[in-house]
Length: 335
Ligand code: AMP
Ligand code: MN
Ligand code: MN
Image (cartoon, rainbow, N blue to C red):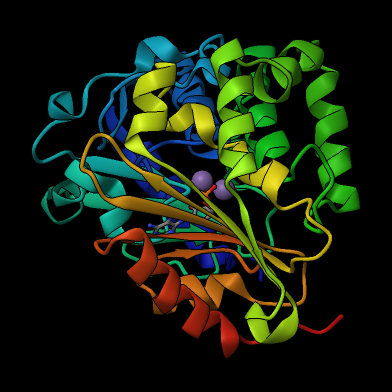
């Protein structure tokens, strides 16, 4: 699903028309949300534009894994994003609710450019650059920079690479195409420290996280009869767990990557209580047989076929019951 030429042309026209640009990515930013936003932000700033970038959730703190990225000086707290921006550009955000406190800027902005790769994207922009086949939003950003004639310098390449490695699980997921490796090669040729970037993302955590991993994995439950007999494995991360370990919600994103290794379960689920609002942030992953994206959309969330999530206003048990029911009739994907 490539982006129509007319949309690229419109995007270039929009980006040429504004000296000041507001950038926003989805709440609780991951490497792709933050990386694709910083990459375009840095390239626009190098052109002399005024760039403000943010996200609409608390805490307004860059997750430790991304704290060494170039361009963090472009970030401002959400309330410093103009109430009615001329041009608002959104990244990795499938629907306006995923902008949190910045959602109101969509209606207030003169123009909105949506840059994304979620198949569930609601196309809320005046112009939409949505490529559901792209491995990451960062891939779409590079194509945009190329079309704008802007150089992908080492400074720009580092956040792009961050988006690419996060969303491909270090080039492991099915989304890893020859083009992904070609882009990675091009980024490495700029001289970025890909080893340091990857170590920060995948191989560095506070000792308290290692201990928390033990706690939440030892309480994991395997339900072989669920998902129509394909198996479900799930666990919780409670507010208490975070309080005790001094960790933020963004620090425990990797729990699901350990849980989903369980051979006996097609689907893995982590229910995390967000200390900011007390709501359950539910992460789901499938091994490829079941479309968890469709399941999460039905439960009010979104995502991709094999990695998706939703926010639940119910308690753990009720949420799990709704999820089990949806998973029992989930669309099966071709092998
Ligand atoms: P996560 O489990 O948080 O790593 O998210 C996996 C995928 O699901 C990502 O593509 C997210 O953007 C998407 N996602 C997670 N939570 C939500 C939500 N509440 N609404 C829409 N999409 C979500
Ligand atoms: Mn994301
Ligand atoms: Mn993404």
